Image (tube, rainbow, N blue to C red; front, side, top):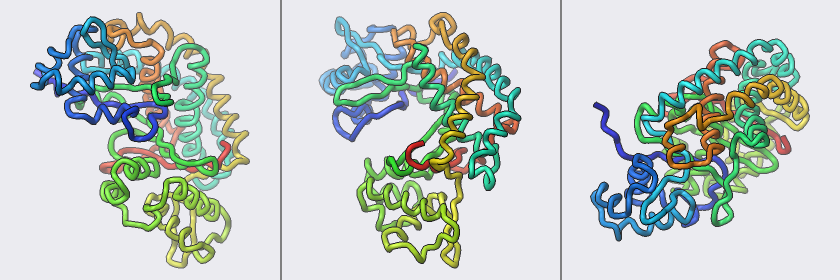
Length: 399
């Protein structure tokens, strides 16, 4: 018989802000918080008191009072008559058959709609400049797999009142939390699907990676997050990067210097000879992150698709066409979730159905992407040990 690990792994969508006591991960990182969240989610709503929770984890009520109060204040939990209930969408092992069955059937129907119009979508993708170097399947991987299904579709579903993409929180934050029971079966439910976008950048340039969550990507987003939380030395160690002076700079300066190098690399005959010392550091850093290559002669070349401002109309055209095809089905398949997902833990705890729809949609479009990759409409990212499957891309500001 399976033994529950008794922990909740926490993810978020949106902006959790800086590392302070208004950040949900600050309290999630406190001793026993993952276990506390699991005990509450795995019980009936408001069924456990602080004494019950403390006893179940071998602690004392006074030792967990502060974090319970803080997580309640942040809207992660609610308290009534001394009992606690979970306030964000969670998936436990017992939920898997319910959510997987619905996601699989919906994903297949939506994917077939796009595959039936493959020729039209490829013709649109051929209008992107980078398609000449990377092919239309790679372009569609980013513009449909990420920009449309993990972007425009979320906005449309929110406009239709089906999904929540925003949840204002204390401290001026705005994010939606999603919890998963810590187990191989649950992590495999979405971790192995192509549904995760990492984004870092400024108005000048966006550094994107899109793929599964089956590892720790060596990308710009991951570096900046580790640097912010643990410092540049630890970020280098975890991502197996060489130390570079630019890593000690503030985030905005790193992004600006790297954006300048990308814009130079996008020009014919780009060379390190024209770079300042700071830009050369940025170029070396970008090469380690696999965004560019630097030859022995100093020639700089892009290694990933670069979506420029002049590509904006074509990208919008791809998104509009894809949404035009799938939107009628979405309105049918993702409504009435309280009936279609009856018995789900989140529903039992009274979590907003629209926030549950957020994770369900990730399950659906992740499976869509897998089918579209298998059918060849989207390019196939190869598995990198320890990092997972993903592709990087660059977007000029304003797209």
